[in-house]
Each structure stands twice: as C-alpha cells, then as structure tokens.
Image 1 (cartoon, rainbow, N blue to C red):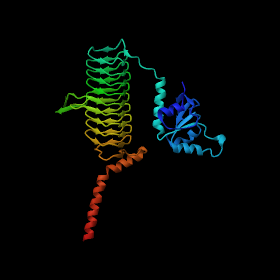
Image 2 (spheres, rainbow, N blue to C red):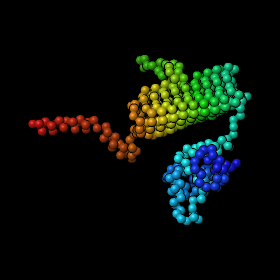
Image 3 (cartoon, one colour):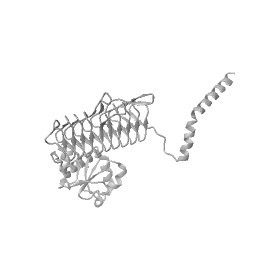
Length: 356
C-alpha cells in the first residue's frame, strides 16, 4: 500500500517540495528506484546519479537540493522532476523511512510457545512473547513482553531478556546473562561463554572459574557469530546503544561504552575499558587492560597496544605496498636501532672535535 509524501513528512518531519499526495510504496537506491519509490542522497559523490534518478521523490540536504535545481538552469522542460524532502541529515531520515516500510511488510512472530520448545516450569515468559521451535529455556529465566526467541535458541538459568528484544535462530545466551529492551542478537552469537582465564604453574594451566555475567543494555545490536565472554569475577558490560558487527570477540570483564560501534572481526581482549561514542573499523584489535576514552575512532586493521586518553582518530598499521617494497622497508625498520646508535656516536665525535 502506497504512503503519501505528506504522511511521511507528518511522521518524520522535513520540508516537502513537490506534490504532497504523491504515493510511494518503498525505498530504493538512486540508480534503481522507479516511480513507486522514494530514494535518498547522503553523499555528494552520488549527485550525478541523483540528477538522473527516476524515483518519485528524494530525501536530500538543503545544499544538495540547491545543486540539483541548478543542474537544469532555466530549461523548465528539463527541470528536476522528483519531489524533494529536505532534511538536515538525509541518511538518518532514510533509516527511519526504511524502518517504516520494513514494518509494513514484515511478518509478525506468532505469540506463544511452540510445541517443540523445552521450557522449565520456573521460567517466566510474557504472554506477548514468541518462543520458536526447538528453543530451550532453563530454570528461572525471564522473557519480557513482545520478545522474540527464534528457532533453536538456548536461554540459560536465570537469564533475563527485555521487552521487544529479538534473538534470531541459534543464539546461545548463557546463565545469568541480561539484555535490556529492543535488543537484536543475530544467529550464531554466543553470549556468556567462559572467559579465557587460566593460571600457569610450571607450564600447566589451571582454569579460573568465570563467575561473572554479561550485562547488556537497551537498544544493542549484536551480529552473527559474535562472542561475548562472561566476567571472571565482575561482569562484562555492554552499555546502551552499542552496535557490534559479525564475528567480533569481546573478552571477559570488558566494558563497552554507550553508542560505540564495532565493524566485523574486531577483537577486544579481557578487561579493556572502552568509552562512549567510539568507532572501530573492521579487524581492529585492542589489547587487554587498556582504557580508551570517549569519542575515539580506530581505523580498520589497527592494533591498539596502549591506552588512549585523548579523543580523536587513531591508525596503527603500515600502508599497503608491493611485497618487495614492504620487505625493504621492514629491513630498514629492523636496523633503525643500530642506525640511531651510530648517529649518536657520530654526534658525540663531532661535538668533541668542535670543543677541541
């Protein structure tokens, strides 16, 4: 069913330029959108695509809207024909519109407990929750209102899952772990496995019991096959609004500050304390027991080997080069210590000659 642009603006705000009763039934990229779609422009690199879009309407900034209008000059017959919704941040506006259209077509989960689920009699499950096939819910677990637990999930003893939180199929959520409201955990994620804790005596490793929990706040997204270890003694804490991509490892006793985002394959070693509003590019690594303050941004592939106490962008990798060139550079780096010592000795000798 089509939604008018007037309805979208009433719901999400923005300034509408064009026919208010224009109907759109979905959102699509600039280059594939047609007359039934609304599209968006959030990056000036794609202005040329926007100028040629066949969409019925476009979500756009004030600056890009002015640029689009200028492309056609005084030629009214060639004027940009799509309606425009002008907004300060087209990308976030797009996200909200996309959520709206997705909700219209999404198939709601069936309320209740599937006949094949195994639920302990002491578990508490809200009447509005959905428990899928082959789910296991152990003693004392609490499942909140409108929560959705997908097929094959495991919920451990005394775990707590907040309202409107969704687990996709095959999520493992171990004993005592907690997640707040409106969370999303994708398939294969394991929350609350033992942290990597061992004492060494004469080359033999002795396991340290991991008795803490994983405590996750509201509005947290956790990607497929991501693992978060439970604390050894204290809890591992993931604060509100954190976004974790696929295949991320969070070690025991870590704290990830609110609204921090990590791309795929990031690894965070135990007891790292990461601030709020940080970002980590794919495959970035953080050593254990470090502190990273708020508003730090780590580039992809970087290794964080020391605490970062000043906000900003940090990068820690050598630029890509042909292998032969890289080997030459590596050889130079290996010899820097020797070169430094030779320069010191040369300076000392020069100073003695000058003084003499």
